[in-house]
Structure formats: C-alpha cells, structure tokens
Length: 88
Image 1: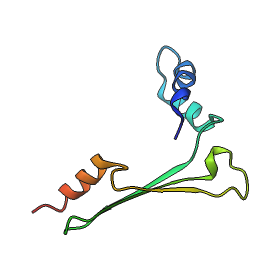
Image 2: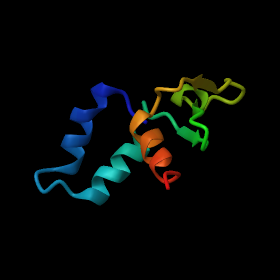
Image 3: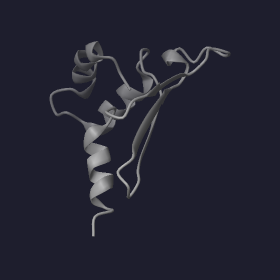
C-alpha cells in the first residue's frame, strides 16, 4: 500500500510507455510503502467482517507493532461480491 503522494513517483518510474513491470518494481521498492493484508468475510445470515493489518508502518523497523484496522465498511465492494456468492 502506498500513500496518495506516491502516485507521481510511480508515473515517473513507469515512463511514457507505462511499463507494468517497471511500475511494479517501483511500487515494491518505494520507501513509503506499507505491507497490508486484508481479510474479508461474510456469512449466510448477513454478518460481515473486514480487517486490515498494516505491517510496521512501512519502515520495517524491528519491534514496531503492526496496526490493525477493523471496520465493516473497509472494503464494501469486496464484501458485496462475497455475499453474492452465497445467494441461491
């Protein structure tokens, strides 16, 4: 995950041809990147849950705690898509 201000850095790295591989490398090596993991779940009775873990605030400093964000509207489109798979 990258902060909004990183978009211009990525555009420069991709070049005019918007080389996808160069763009991926630039994002992976960006100094402000933060590793994020998203878990989303729905149940047949309508319950929804969504949790995101931001690893060490992007600095990869040993011992720095991860940030955990829990909110049912964290990824509403993903939750809707998951719920649709449970419809008869």
